[in-house]
Length: 432
Ligand code: CMC
Image (cartoon, rainbow, N blue to C red):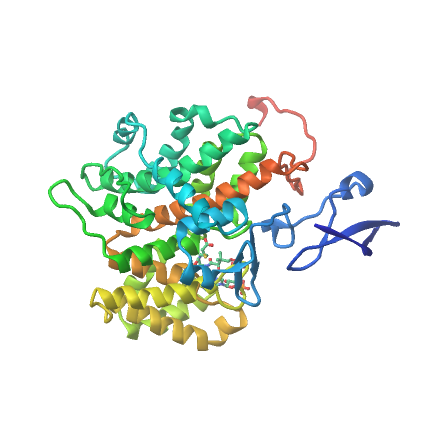
């Protein structure tokens, strides 16, 4: 963070004028440091939804919403999606640089050798209702990891933080695959070390003891790309949740469980499930105008799921890659005439020409096409958000580690604009 000595912000109110430093980031708008505002001026700022507030310093991910740009450690997402792969991206997010071959081998080896779950965890899974949503299971199992891996919960020990990080990145695919297997009544499939990260996950989801699952390299590449595109997204709701939970000193397994819980919401990670359900509900191209009309109607709560983004006000660069992947996967499977894909493409075309969507800068986001790919691979909609959680785990961990290592880190404690009753005296029940 560079403090710009020439730039200062003055805030004047009620006869006093206060001066605050301005910091210039590597990229993005300047930031006014108002951390001393309450101490010197006795007032808070009010910013619901944090639309104008930087909650931390970070060197991991950068988004330029107007340009439609997403960088991981400075590298554009489209280059990483095309040339890199998920575990290399994990290394980049965690340690800040692309690995050498030797560093990557060592990292992949460490992840691969931590993919098994403590055997007792199979009992834990079996405690859930058969019809439980996989996100509910994953939330619970992730939280329970702090009891199974208690030897890596001391956040003051860098070695334990590192072990916990590797454990979570390695074990989440197993947890997510097992949540799926449990929900469909099939036996758990154990990880295999000779497969890459994405192929191993696909096999754990789709193999059965009676018949092994041959992983198609195009599908595993598409899966890996989905992981890469979802790996981090700076200070979004679930990442901020992880940071806030971690700021109290909570252990990393508990913090990531908090992130998973937040991701589940339909305005965040749950949107991919909602987007595919919506495309199916629309069903045919001729129904699209009616749904566009509803999306524009203020008295109708309906929104076009997979459209719009808090930060991207041009296009979502992840959606572009995802659309290309959808074409590849459906082409490979010989279902390029899939009606849902046709509805999605036509909906996108119509919405992008519509004044309402143009004025409000609403573009397809990452979730618009990801559901179509996952559906074509054979995943039910309930697995979409778990797959997002699996991929985002590395981002949450990188952000959590960055926060713990920050010397200025303090417990997160927002203030409020209180609008409730002022003082009043207790009234006995018989007098109310
Ligand atoms: N369909 C119709 N209108 C919309 C939509 C939509 N999908 N999204 C926003 N608007 C309108 C909204 O009604 C508002 O209109 P007005 O100014 O007249 O009140 C305006 O656009 C601004 O919307 P907002 O809700 O104030 O914007 P936000 O930044 O708070 O919300 C969002 C961003 C992603 C929650 C929202 O666009 C949305 O609900 N989209 C659908 C859900 C979705 O696809 N979420 C996935 C996000 S990407 C994955 C992730 O990062 O988790």
